[in-house]
Structure formats: structure tokens, C-alpha cells
Image (cartoon, rainbow, N blue to C red):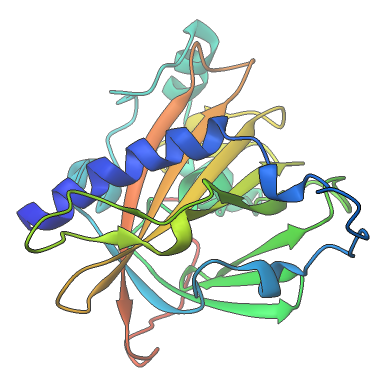
Length: 265
């Protein structure tokens, strides 16, 4: 990763924390203005998240590009029960049970090397088609209550977060990246089927809750990066939040996509 992008990511992290604490000032009524129906998710978007994206494996290479060894739970805040479950990982058993996608669930899928196509399924639903594991995630705007049975991708409620002004990180003679309209996409995911945080059996339970923030960084050379920060909480297996950051780079088209099914190993 180049130096400019590293600095932009640091600024992006600061913005995400700010957005997480900000109140929805724009949603408050002003004076005697007549109330208006809320804008759709698509209409309110502060940036264009649609298109084709490829993951950049810039950290935790040995845990993301290959399946770690059984029992390797490094950097995951597991409790004793979580470590016990990880030690009992049996990929052959998962395959036989038809659960080879446990390591491709929402809390893990964005960490895997992949290409993603993002489209609007309708005005209030973003659709993410992920070639690794051939998984699909749906982000629902204006619908907070989970619907349907538990699944690997769960139920994701989405909202746009705004700080109120356009922030540019590290301003100077040459900017190193900016977030258009200071907007961030927040996604809360629940209703999950129990699965793995890593493919080597590091568990999360059906009680896990995940929050994600999606930010767009645009560099002076025109390259665009989607930066995703994830926070996974699980009262059953984790002693603290499992926090990670991922980067994706925009591609011109989907010609390099390579859909492959889930594998337990």
C-alpha cells in the first residue's frame, strides 16, 4: 500500500469514529418546514458505492490468503469456550454436514480474497455479489427488524451517516484523499447462523452482532478505494470486539471475477 493511502486510511478511521458518535442532525425538523418523506437509500447516497471492487490483502496475509492451522486463534479475543470450539474444528465434519460455508459468513467474508459487484437491487436495497464462496449480501435501508430465517449473511440494516461538512484529510498542496460529502455507510448485521470468524474454525455464535462502516477514498490519480471497518461482538465466544479494517480498489468491470463455491478447508 502506498504512503498516501496509508495516511488516508488513518484519516478515514478518524472520520468513522466521528460518524459513529454524530447525531442525525439532518434528520431533525427545522422551523415550520413541512415534514418530507425520507429519501430512499439510493437517493441519499453521499457517494457511488456501486461497481466492481477487488480486495487488497494488506494485513494478516497468512490468515486471509490461506487457511490457518487448527488452533491458531492469534489476534482474536476469544474466551475459553471459544478456544475450545476452535480446537475442535473438523473441516471434514463441516463438509459432511453441508456446512462448508461457515467460514464465508458475513463476519468473515469481507476478509477473504475476493471480487465484489455492488448494485442497487431496488431503491432501498444494496446487493453485494461476492465471487469467493458465491455469496450474496443484502443491505436494507429503512428496515431494522430482521426478517426470515437465520443465515450465513444474516439480516443487514443500512443507513448513511453524515458529519455535516465535506472533510478532506491532510490538506495541503496535494491532497492525499478525501471522503465525498463526509458520508459513511453504516451496516448492522444480526440474525446470523453460527459460523467462523476465520476458516480454521474460530467461532462466532448466532448471538453475534456486527457493525460495519464503508468509506470511499478518492486519490489525486483517480484511483478509488472502499475502506471497510468491522466490529464484531459476541457475548458467547468473545471477550471484546473483534475489530478489523479491509480495503478494496475499484475496477473498471467484472471481467476478472472468478466465482468459486465454498470450501471447508
